[in-house]
Every structure is written in C-alpha cells, then in structure tokens.
Image 1 (cartoon, one colour):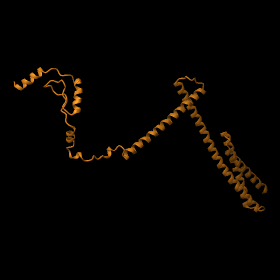
Image 2 (cartoon, one colour):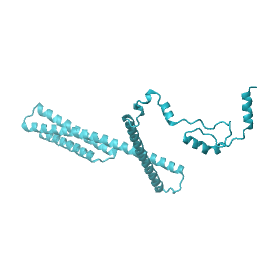
Image 3 (cartoon, one colour):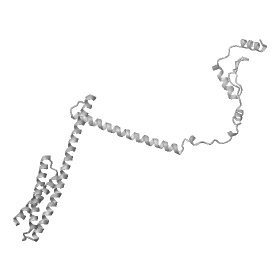
Image 4 (cartoon, one colour):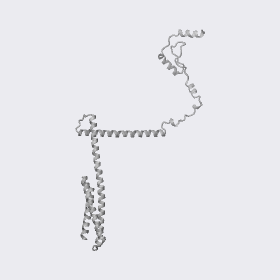
Length: 261
C-alpha cells in the first residue's frame, strides 16, 4: 500500500463528523458574497469543500466576453418581434372572430330563451301545469308544430288555388274586353251601311252571333269556377263582373243585329 493512501485513510478515520449542510449555509452564502472560497466554519482539516471556489466577476466577464462576436449588437429577427405587423393583424383577426362568435352565441341564447318562453306560454294556454315533465312539454310542442305545419300547408294550398283562379279570370276578362272591342267595331261598320243587304252584313251578323255565344260561354265557365272554389277575391269579382258585362254587351249586339236585319 502506498504511504499517501495510508495517510488519507488515517486522516479520514480521525476526522470528526461534518456539520449538516443547513448549518453551513449562512457561512457559505457569506463567503460567496465576499468572493472567497467558502468552507464550513467548523469543518475539520481535510474535509471536502461544499462550495466551488469563487471566481471574481471581472474574470467571469472577461471569460464570457472572450468571443469577438460578444461586442457585436444582437440583431432581432422577424420572428423575435412580438409586435410585428403580421402578428398584430393576426391578433386583430382572432379578436374579431371571437367577437363574432360571442355575438352569435348571444343571438342563439336569445332565440333559445324566446323558444322556451313561447313553449311555456303555449303549455300554459293548453292547461299544462307549471311542473309538467320534459317529455310532456316536448310531445305538446311537437303536436303544436305538426298542427301549425298542417294549417300552414292548407292555407298555402288555398292561396295558390285562389291565385290560379285569379289568373284565369284575368285571362277571361281580357278575352271579353277584346270581344267587346270587336262588337263596337262591327256596330260602327253596320251604322255606315245600314240599308245594304249583302254578304258582308250576313257575315257580320254571324260573327256577332258567334261572339255572343262565346261571351255567354265565358261567363258561364267563370261563374262555375267561382261556385266550385267558394272563394270571393276582390280582383276575381271585378274580373267576373267585366266578363259578364262583355257577355251582356255581345248578346245585346247580336240581338240588335238580328232585329235590324
């Protein structure tokens, strides 16, 4: 065995117990503040040090700045800037989307409150108690929705039928007005040549008779359509009256033409 190893073993065996680290902390901190090597105040000779040897801050600064690039100013990259235009635009966009989502959520909550209020009012109107179950409320709401949908579809059907009848009556009224114009023209032609009994007068009388028959047929079909539908729309009534007036005028013209012949 080497003499150095024997000496270290004897020194370690003869050394008293070391103080706890907590008891040595004040002296260690004081030593580190002074910049000297910190050893335990009551540590025996040969005991290992609990604090690394202190290095003056001037030497640390010199070692840290030994690199030539230390004196160069640090250039911030585009990604290091927290307030870049791109990030500000992105933040503004996200805030705008957040406000829109908040507004949408508020609108949906308002709709939900209105729907709940309407359901509560409908349930109260039908005699449903305040403490009725959720299943009963849902069933009554579905029944009301189905009945409302059926009523709306029926109303829409009758409205479409009334509009179709109104269009037909307008067409018939236009035809009746055309017939009435032709009757006036034929009357004017007859007044110009009242005494001649030729083929033109006979043709005019036949045309008047056909027009009168057509006007009567139009009036009859319009009256039947109104009776079957059971609807009395103001515009439809006006068109029907115009058709009847045209038919009466055509009949009067035809009878006058026959009487004049």
